[in-house]
Length: 528
Image (cartoon, rainbow, N blue to C red; front, side, top):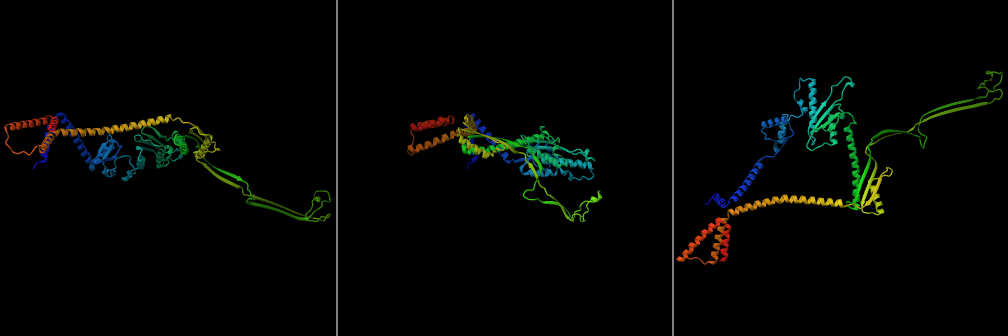
């Protein structure tokens, strides 16, 4: 029974001997590349996937974590200059839990500092530990932001004084290390400020200073509401609100005009004046009662009555004799008199109206809209466009809003140039892709062709001999009658020897120049 390995080794040996030096070098190069690729594949296939355990660690923190991982028997890798630690992906959470139990990495300590027995500590040390814990908790919370890579918080809380005028307000300072290319928005800076201020009793948000690792002041912490940082944030907010109003109105008008006139047939620009002043107040007015007598609050009435005679003055000159005596009949006339007097005072409630008002900032005080339409529109169409734009933008004559609509032919040369430039860019992108992937395909084809040629060249002598014998047998079967064992004459023996010599020469020719041998054999067969 033949051994397949021995046959393969024999064939490989024959193929190697039939190659020239260039073919051998090329075969060795291809074999080396294939072996290296297989080795790399096996190495990476058998290697577990690693995931970040901790990153952005200091040298001391990384050293402590690595020592603990060694004790736990958890494999690890270091990257980023030793600041990033990687562990197998399926053991990330296990490693974090075990390290957390050991208080690693030893970043800003939080309230777990009080988990230890603090019996016997003085009140001063207790205050220091509380401040450390609060700073550590704030650092951890701030680092939850995806833009923040690291954070340090410093709190300055003065001691309480007996007199209020001697007390100093607490302050805070925050240093942020941002990730590469990351920036904080104004809302995020305000959120950090309020977070720190609300975590410390008596801390005003205006006394929280925030800077980044590049030395940029994000919040001044000067304690003045009118500080430059505060004003700049307010100005940025106002500009953003103004831009948002203008953009909303522009898009509303633009989409409507494009639906009616066509794409890129109109250009709209909107300018909005906003009132950012915030007003609050109370108004009290007094009005008279209308359509009624009103509501009586109080009434006061006085009445006087008298009935009696009229005394006629007379008698001895003098004051006493000429004073009339009421209640007695007069001697001269004998008449009587009735007297009645009434007074009434009514106090009515006053109609009082109380009004409270508050105006929010951002009220539109004036709008200016400019519309430019492509082409030469007749006046009636321009009037229609004006009416539609007024309705869409909500323009008001009382407010003094302004609208201008003009029709002019657009200059399309710039658009055409932009289209050509865009088409050229797309073409270059396609050319780059074709060149990239075409080169890869060409290399694969060349490697395949060269490898196939080497293998064919290595096995060519055996193939040539096999083809020769197959064609010879087929030719003998087709052209010659069955051979019978006969006695050969001397001339026939000479011919047999010549034929043998020719076969030997052909074999040598096959080994030295296989292609010439194939051509020679085929020419002989065609001649016959």
